[in-house]
Every structure is written in structure tokens, then in C-alpha cells.
Image 1: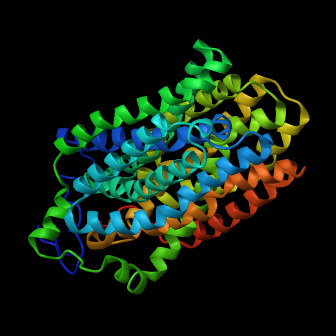
Image 2: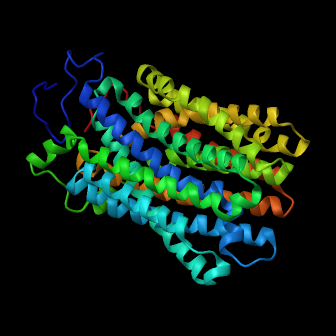
Length: 444
């Protein structure tokens, strides 16, 4: 095995003995902070739409059947996901050619501008059909931005860490996603608590979007202050930047692309049904006030934040596969209780328990998934290789899930939605069992 400091045959060198077991440097910690804060803002902007979906239905669509209006807003939510593969492709290629740092800066800028547009856009009563058109365009922009964010941030985090801490570093990507959801829940809870329901519907939701947009300005400055990863810079120095990353991942790395989709599908589905949409679903099924369901969601997500880095450290110690296999198996077993018990008549405390257990299970995916995806590809196509198939998975299994769940519930079959969840998790379980373990392997 060659142990010099050069990259041989497209592989980064094996970790030196001095690198094994070492702590993160100050530069590496700063990189984690920059990527994490940016993703928190990105997903606050992205998730807050779902948090206020019932209010947006009244603001941007004509008065009438409330279920129809809500389904219209959720359809716009799903439309945003159509842009995620496009964003994953375009911003992924951009980050593979020009650097992870520039890709991260561009994605946060686009997301924040789109949130600002939603926050200040007049409602349907004021400008008619133009209101939902502007909402759709803003959501498409957010989808484009989110499509590139995950790949750029994941690559940046993992390339900035020593090999024995890659899963730990990657776990901060999903820590940030969960934290962004928590911020959106807390914004909704605070705004619902300090004012009347009328105030929340009139202007409170706008405050949430404007705050989320303003957070992006600070995060953009932080992201611009960090250094580009050494892995990417070494490729630029050797002129090894891939000119056609999209073509390369679908020819040379076809199996890796399919593996990333399989790795991500269960987590993406459960991310939206167990975390993002769960407060709204509980509100619709049980009639519990949205303020209380948001509080339950905030508690559950808060628990996952405490566990995420610890489970990331576990994935560095025992491997990625055992953590992901445990996640998928537990998800299959928990699919019915997480939804079926909502129809049995439950209290707020029981809702907290249900969602907390769901989030603890989902932590296994969050802690090990980003590093697993990043380790499938060489540096020249890493961002594109993560971003595009991940975005396809999000679109197919995440973006459609709130709409499917609401439509199924509206048709009277909400108690059977768990069957769909269990089936998707079963497919991912097979992928986890069959995939190679990359723990201890050199980063290409």
C-alpha cells in the first residue's frame, strides 16, 4: 500500500498513523460549524413552508373547501421537489467544478431570497391568481437550492474531517436538517403563542419567513469565511476536475447512483412523515391545537439533536452498515404504531412519546447516511454523485409523502398509510444489507 502524500490511481492516500484517533483541528471544526449553520438556515426556510401549510392554504388560494386548499398548498410543496434533481445536477456540477465553498454560498443565497419573496408576497385576496403563481416560483427556487445544498454540504463536511471521524462529521449534516426543522417548529409555536390565531394568519407567518430569510445573510458571510477543502484543492492542482460529472456518474458510477437512491429512500420518506409533517398530521387526525403538536415536535426533534453526533461516533466505531440496518429494521416495526395509534384517541404526552421514538429511530439514518453516500464517489464527481441521486430520492419519496398522507387520510384510509412506510423501509433494508462497508477505507 502506498503511503506517500500523493493521490494514486484516483484514491486519496491511506490515513497515516498520526491521523488515526486524532481530534478535529480548529480549521476542521470551523468547517463543520459553517456547513451546519448554513444547512440549518436552508432547512428552516424549506420546512417552514410545511409548518404553515394550513395557513398558506388560506392566504394563497381562493376560499372554499379547506381540504382542497390544503391539498393545493401541499401540491405546491411537492412541486418544489421537482426542482431538487435539477438543482442537484446544476449546483452539484458547479461545486465539483468550482469548489464546495462556492456551491454552499450560492445555495444559501437562493434559498434566502425565495423565503423573503414568500414572506412579503401579497395574498390571493389582494392580487388574485398572481399570488399562487409567485408562491410556485419561489418554491421552485427553494427546491433548486435545496437540491444542491445536501451534496455540497455533505462533501464539504466529510472532506474536511480525518478518516476516523468522517461519520461524526457527516452526522452534522442531518443534525442541521433536524435543527432547521426545530427552528421552524419553534417559530410556529412562539408566533402561535404570543398572538391570536387571527394574528398568526394575518401576519405572524410572514414574520417567520422573513426571519428565516434574514438568517441567511449571516450564514452567507460565515460560509464565505471558511477555506475550501484540501481534497478539492488537490484535484484542482492536478487538473483532475471532471468536465462532465453528470455523464460520469451515470456511466462509470451507475451502481453507486442506484445505491445512493436506495440508501436515502427510507430516510427521506420518514424525514417528512415522522418529522416535518407529523405536527400537521396529528392536528388533522386528532383535532389537537397546532400549537401543542408543534411543541411535541420540537421536543422530539430536540432529543434527536442530542443523539445525532453520538450515533455518528458509533458509526465511526462499528461501521455504517450496522447503524443503517438497525434503523431500517426498527422503522419497519414502528411504522404501524407511529400512525395507527393516532386514530385511537391520544393525549399530548402520548404524541410526544410517539414522535420522540420515531425521531430516535430516524437518528440512525441521519448519523450514517451522509458519510455513506459521500464514500461512494471520487472527489471529481462527489457533489454531483451525492446531490442528484439524493434529490431524485427526496422527490420520489419525500416530496410526495405529505400529499399522499393527507389525501389518504382525507379518503378515510389514513390508518393504512403505515403499509407504504413499511414497504419503502424494507427496500432500503435490503440495500443496507447488500452494500459494502466503507469504514476505514481511504476517501477517493
